[in-house]
Image (cartoon, rainbow, N blue to C red):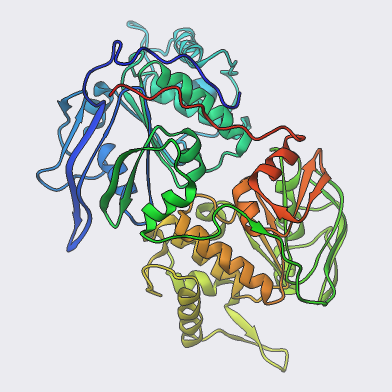
Amino acid sequence: MSGHTVPAPARGAGLPPGPRLAVEGVSMTFGSATVLRDVTMDVRPGEIHALIGQNGCGKSTLAKILTGLYRPDPGSRVTVDGVDLRLPVRPDESRAAGVAVVHQSLGLVPDATVLENTRLGRYKGSRFLRRIDWKAEAEATQAVFERLGPRQMPLDTKVADLHEDEKAVVAIARAVQDLEEGGGIVIFDESTRALGRESLERFFGLLDRIVATGTSALLITHRLEEVVEAADRVTVLRDGEVVVAGKEVEGMTKSELAHLMLGREVEGLEHRTAAAPASDAAPVMIDGLSGGSVRELSLSIRPGEVVGVTGLSGSGYEDVPYLISGVSKAQDGTVTLPAGQVALKGLSPATAIGKGIALVPEGRESAGLVGAMTVTENIAFPQTCTAKASGKVRPLTGSAERRQAADWIERLDVRPPWPHAVLANMSGGNQQKVLLAKWLATDPSLLVLHEPTQAVDVGARKTIVEAVREAAREGRAVLVAGSDENELALLCDRVLVFDNGVVERELTGELTPQAIVQAIYTNSPRTRLRERTLQGAS
């Protein structure tokens, strides 16, 4: 349920007078580099406290300190309900103190059931036979889900078969089962990155129930709308230092938050007005595309135009990028490009790339990049050979690779600007820039992107949006598939809304997040993620 509200506990009733979590003077040094400097913040009982900052600001490092992956510098202090945690944090002591974590990837085992994922690491065997008592485990699991609300969860279903918001519920259940009712704190480390609007509303409805009891939540996120619409207070990190600690969020805007994060104004965060493409060249035509959940899709994209496709999860829009790039098998349809008409049935990714179709997929870690390779190697990967006039091919030289990488590093402001940096060591936002550069470097006629700004900070988002717009201005047709209405409003000239495999609505003119959400949910108004009735104890 969106905008979920539950009665708050009386202010201070049954809650400790001090902070639930206190971080005092925490610093972290790697070699000669200091990535956190004297970080001090607190989270109150019964509140949602957001922690935000640009990629590389140190928030992931702080999360790893709180979860025991890193040992902070001497003099650092972390307390839960006034009790010091030994540093580095020991997972068993942290759990006993009431600290739970829901990681970015949710940390679930896809081929295991809901029950197995929830109770993993907590199984209790019978005293004499030393076998798992599955009946007792099922009862314990069911009790956790009942605590979270009336929603039924099939315990014997594999996690791989669940919707994204259901997976998030399982991860939350696993985290909170060790917490006393109304106690403890749950740290959400980019846990909402893959949730669309509908799933996000359910997530915060559930989180509302949790914090209403007095349990706290530390929400580490890149999505500023979550902070504006759902958090009670916010702490902002910039370059490893706290620039704002525990500021009340009520009344703040995304632009104000972005300014605090970056130290400068960022324009164009809310929406853009559609502009007609300047090019009179023939459009890219997709005719009769069928496959996956898509049924007989036909659309045209003019060079210089950015067209978005969206809808509810399972409506078919998510299949479009992969069908027209040959990653998924189409049943029928054609695409007409400057290189000629291409049959989509039987299309291979190699043929698609050769015809001028470039796909920037969702999930850069698993589908788009090679973490063990350098920035240069990743950008050059699709172009390991180039055609000569004679039609023969020759390898792309090392000097050409380096020049190409240096050019895209500068154009997309990749940080650090090191061509030989290993990609796995870079922040998510900079990895996403490299992924985009990898495919822009192929000079495609049709650029296809799926969730291009997912899990990147506001600075990286602005850079990526500008790069995609520039790609369109240079004469490329651009198709963006996404569930984030803010991303679509920033990027697109038109948005097509899918339902049951077909386009049901087309949005043109001035695109706003509100208008896109209304179209997706059949003109239901966009509601806030959470009504702030719960402010925690002071």
